[in-house]
Image 1 (cartoon, rainbow, N blue to C red):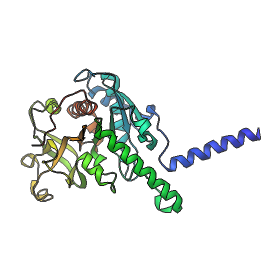
Image 2 (image 1 turned 180 degrees about the vertical axis):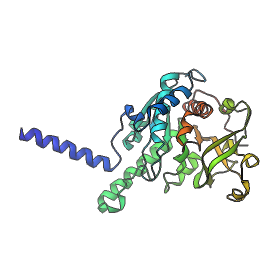
Image 3 (image 1 turned 45 degrees about the vertical axis):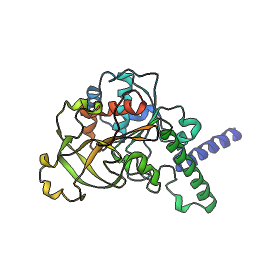
Image 4 (image 1 turned 60 degrees about the vertical axis):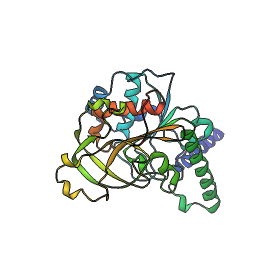
Length: 310
């Protein structure tokens, strides 16, 4: 009996220690935690009922939601929307995780794309990094570099990366990630109804918007380098002409270019980013959910789309 109790406490202790490093995998069934039933029903009703294109082969998507900085309350909504999307469309099999070991090369290779669900902070480093003994810091840094290279090689080799909202506010000390995703978050001065224009209305990832701009209320981001229309193909951006009180918004960037969605190439890989996803009701916006499905199918390699900057 004593031996069994000791073993149990050892297991609990090891699990606790791993959790400090962000190494425990979240269960796929946890996606509806903290979401009211009526809002789950709204998500289920709004998610597309079929894939835009038939998958070329069975696809597997890693949905990663770990945060080591600010935690968005919308994260469970993102999990739920992706869970329902996969179930209704059959476009991919989602694997939900907060376990950084999923980015080890031997595990990551099973996936066709990674979906970053409102992540923040240095995802591959422990939160208490500065308080660790020097040797543990050294080991953590070595693992961080290994996982960074694994993700970079994964995308560059021809796989996919998709991210929403806060996916541009992570890996601060890793410059290459900014090149992969296409930009770095610098501020979010707007959280009110704004106008959105279609920069590329004929693009397949914009088909859901039927050629027309629209209004949306969400936390609207401003980006800094390496963002440039020379390196990404912008699909959606802030329409200053349709945005109330636009005078207070102008000047946040010298070029007044406030892109909100783009696609790009990194090596042979495909990258899709959408800045929407702060407010909960975004996750039952039919057009946005269809747009995300198309972006995911593009990242997975099933939906062809031009990534040429223009």
